[in-house]
Amino acid sequence: MKHILYLDGNTTSISWVIKTKESSISQNRKHVEEYKNKITKIQSKYVALHISLFWGIGTFNIKNEDVIKIKLDEEIMYQQLKKEIKIQDEFIKNKIKFIESFIKQRKLQVEFEIIKVEKNLAIMD
Image (cartoon, rainbow, N blue to C red):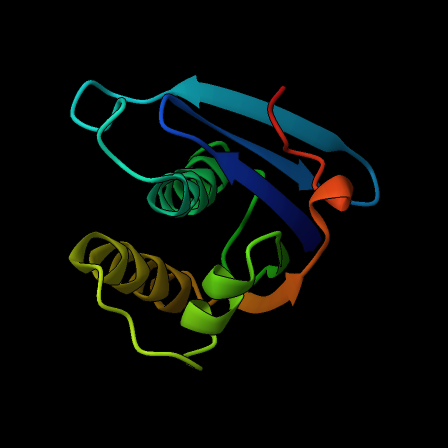
């Protein structure tokens, strides 16, 4: 099945939207105390990506070998995930390692796309 994943994050919360031809599922979560007001907006968006993939598999919305187009509104995330730039942030490095291993383990076919923030369906008010 093909999915489109949108995500957002800030210092207190994360959100994501998983769309298919048939449905659109929106979720949001408050950060755990360990992260709340202690991580950057970009780090929070990586938490959203990590959790949304894990949640999608856990709720059977995303299945092994599915195709996922991940829409990113941060150019730096796109460049980091495409390995176009070196990452200095250890938190982000660890999140990317987990995300990559999860994608590999579940044999997901993933494509990243940069979008304008106005097109991000997961943006929190």
